Image (cartoon, rainbow, N blue to C red; front, top):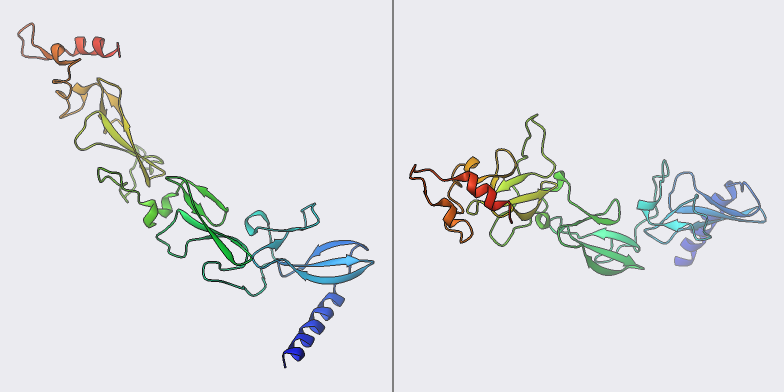
Length: 255
């Protein structure tokens, strides 16, 4: 029975190859419907061939082996593929594939002949299966578990977009630190948090989205009062009950 099926398959392949007319005596040419199928012509006779499972045929490739990763090839209308030969971690025998758990976005598998090699993106990056590379997460990826990075102090980027003065979502929103006037957070692409800090003598002004003088940030006016380099400048030398911010600015500019 198996021999009969093999014979039938061979006859079908031979029939399809016979239908293909070689444009030249020698060369490799794509199938019009199937992206991983191609024809190899020798002396004007076509032989039907398949790329290794997971790879597709690139007619523009000048190399003899024209099978390449799908993200490197424009298949156009050649949308069909051979049946997948999957293994435990490889949807196809060859290629780069995202982790099967949609919540794990920074881990991917490089599959070679069905054997999976696990790899991990650098800190803050996630795997883009359509491009085959690790990249910064996009706004639409906020729900992905690994992308919702939590810093040691418990901060993670809010799911809600931060809007600018024109009502547009900010690409890299910033947020004030809840306890430290000098610090703030930047959310890269809205999802990956990074702790940042203002220069000595400044406080982060969330309303203006920039580092500012402490007197312009409500609740941070006395932030540097006990700092050894600023304490003396908060002394009320003229007895008017006000802090001499002018002296503070001059002193701050030295650092």
